Image (cartoon, rainbow, N blue to C red; front, top):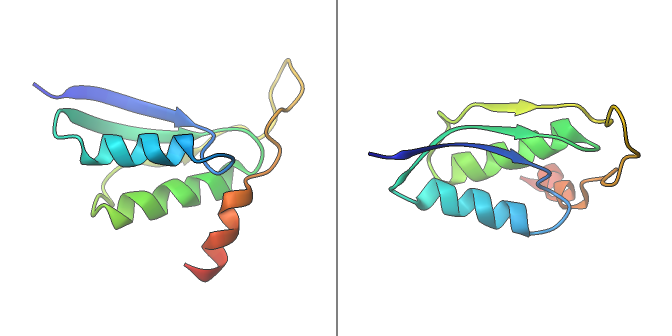
Length: 89
């Protein structure tokens, strides 16, 4: 039986989240039920996750942009610099 995974990510700041998403998309033991993004520029982060899902031929994975500002603590990841690639994608 596949393991159901919901990935909550701040993809777009450093490469670790992109690698994690690529791994989950390629892993036959994983049932990726969705991706949520948070932190600054969460919509751009969701777009990055969408690019990776489509590149892996998995447009069926639901992706939802979350809150851009934390409720109780200062924002640590305000920008998604890796999203610059979206302009040429």
